[in-house]
Length: 79
Image (cartoon, rainbow, N blue to C red):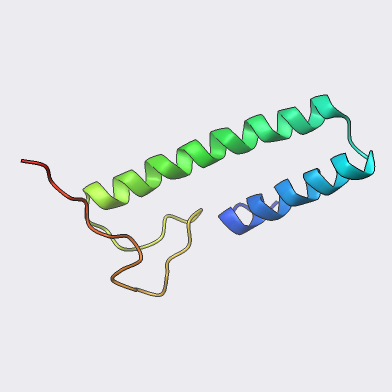
C-alpha cells in the first residue's frame, strides 16, 4: 500500500468514481471518507509541527519540496 498524500488523493477519486458508477455502497464510501479525514487531520498536525520546529523537510507522508525555502512558510509569532 502506498502512503503518500498523492496516493490518498488518488484513492479518494477512485472511491468517488466507484460511487458514481454504483460499484461501491454509500456506507463503505462514508467509511473511506472518515479514514481519509483522520489521515488529513494527522497531516495538518505534521505541518504544524514542521512550522513550529522551523523544519523545511517533508514528513514522509507529505513529500519534501526539493529543499525549497518557501515550501512551508515560517510560523508567525504573535506578540
